Length: 176
Image (cartoon, rainbow, N blue to C red; front, side):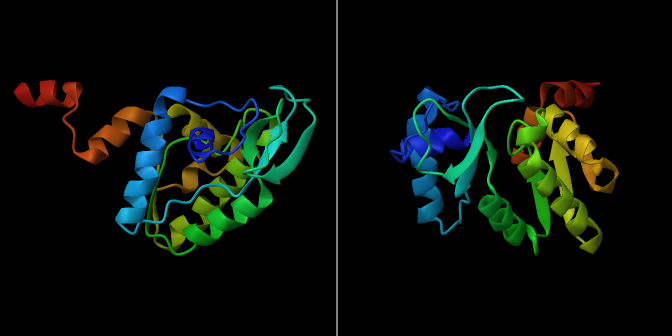
């Protein structure tokens, strides 16, 4: 998702995954966040690869410096620290989606670091909600799933429920 925001900003994203049809939305969301005084944190550096493979050549670059032919597959060390600092005194976290291609060990460091951070803040009183199959797999891979407040494999549905939308399955139960 982040590369859509980067491209909307005019950054070079190389061959990173971008949702072209969402570029306008990314621009609008950034403007809305600014208008409402909401800090929208995006990674400042990324781990890039020359191919989508576990044995790819990698390097760490600034978010706005992804060269042609390379793709972003994880957040970099500066971004990990940025997010850890932001999470340190957070009271509620809803996590839907890993930080990178955590299925490949070379690109799992960001996801594992954030999972570990959530595991550290949960016993300090933070509510940590993990939503979606990939996010659940990530906290399981990190070995910290049992330390989260709540885990749901219903990623999109979980977010819709939190938004206050009526879910068809829940509505059907209410009718009976």
